[in-house]
Image 1 (spheres, rainbow, N blue to C red):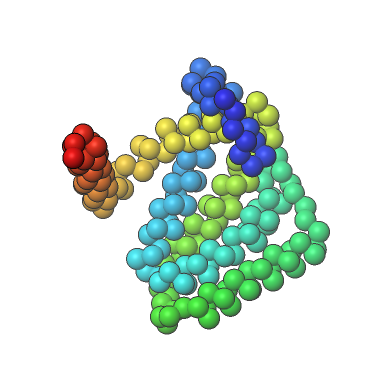
Image 2 (cartoon, helix red, strand yellow):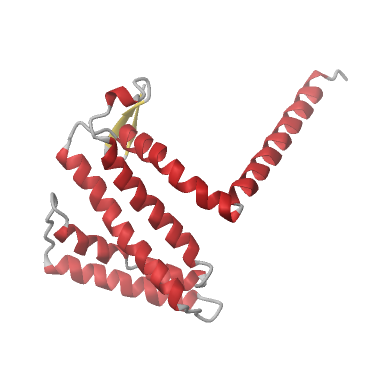
Length: 196
């Protein structure tokens, strides 16, 4: 059974197994390190910046992706001047909208700004790195990319989650949701079997 997703087709009947891998594990270690670093820095920056300020910085991602695409081996992408102008206008519009919409005063912290800039640099590498992987090895499937980067990323993600206590909060939340779901299912079953 195949499902169309954007411009790619995912065949759910074929699945994926590591035996079908076309890229080496070291490729996914790099990809996962960038992905997890970006995620952690973005999330961590919220401890030092308020959300509108972080959103203002994150809105510049499109420019960084364009610039990084010009320097990454395997892409060396060149954009016409009008696309850079369009991206700059888009970013300025997003910044103005974010600042106008902010209910709180902007909160700046040097640590938060450094963290969000680091996340932006990693984000700009991430999309371009994925494109390089697909270009250099056209047999790479989305399923392989998703599976391998998740398997490699999980050990990188768990230690910070344990240290911050988030893994325990997530476990408790999931178990409460599961118990609530089970109770609702039992109630529905009980009401369906009652005779009036």
